[in-house]
Length: 352
Image 1: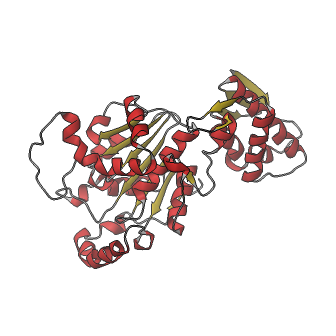
Image 2 (image 1 turned 90 degrees about the horizontal axis):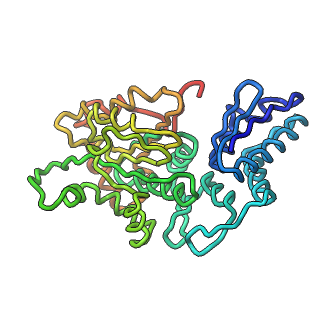
């Protein structure tokens, strides 16, 4: 269904649409509709019920804008929730032994400091200030780079965010990607079919998944192509729509591989790139696609970079001490590479 709504003539445009069109972006994310504002009209497209709910929200935003009242993010979420309740929203089984309105289910995508994953209903929350910046970046940007040492939650939080969005109905697919690069060992030819050959390289991603879903859920999702775990080489030529695509161990991509991966992003998709520049296994560390991408993209609008450090390590307490013990050697071996990719804890381009 499609609907075109005129902006109220006597309403303040910024109050109506929000700063940077924030209000219509929230409507799009919460209801799953396609919505855009141009000149004096707002165009909405999607399922009939979601479009009607969006119209109700826009009408209420118009009333507030006419009174020159600026609504907070929480106020807009409340409007969307109330419109869903009052708009004849039907109840549906979300597949986890509970029922909720479609609007409520989709609203979980705009998480408030917690990620709702499958395992036992246990939410995942940030455990440090930088991790919270990471979650905020994942919520607000379609392309996020997370760079930091082992144990800081880069991959774990990325997978948790993807599972959360999947459970909330915000996307149709999760794609977990890793370069098949050996960590200082030559394993030779591995036995078995293609899946058996690449499985050892992808094991860390499976480990994170198993923390958030039971085995039967993972098996069902992989059987129906809802969750896909694949080596980086299999990404060429694809366009991934309505998906969260995570590239893990990105420091071991080449510049060409990184460009190939980033250009796989389709409509309504998010990409998360994680890596640790102290553990580059390429013959020439200067050829790392992660370092190159950080230099090229850190001022590109819509791209966020988050830096994590030893204070964010959430594994066994010894891991932080181990990272410290190897720190001097790592600094010498990088020969200035870290300075090439230095970013603030969370960065946005100028004017974004």
